[in-house]
Length: 103
Image 1 (tube, helix red, strand yellow):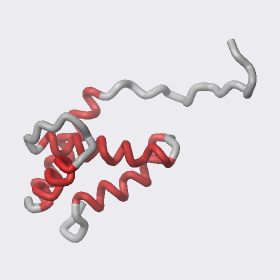
Image 2 (cartoon, one colour):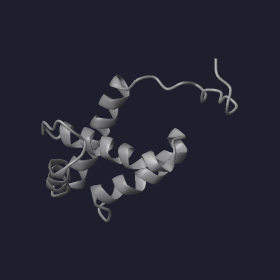
Image 3 (cartoon, rainbow, N blue to C red):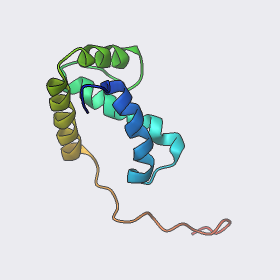
Image 4 (cartoon, rainbow, N blue to C red):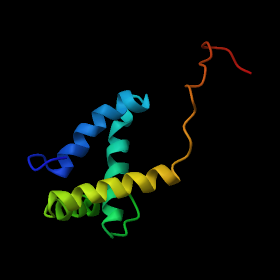
């Protein structure tokens, strides 16, 4: 993050990097963006039940009015909190089975 790029745009860009970084299908990248936005808005003190909807957009807009240093602090704090509470990721993707085979 820097002075020239708003937080919402940073989140949109991170969404595309998540596909490679997390090894997820591209169609799930919007969920990653929403989850990250939700974490950040909650770190700012908003209590929101869902990572989707107008309240997230309003929270991000409010945060974007803060100094860049405060935005960066919120992002770092949200990332730390997520890292502590996220389920562990498998070391490697599960082996895929051939079509038509069952257990």
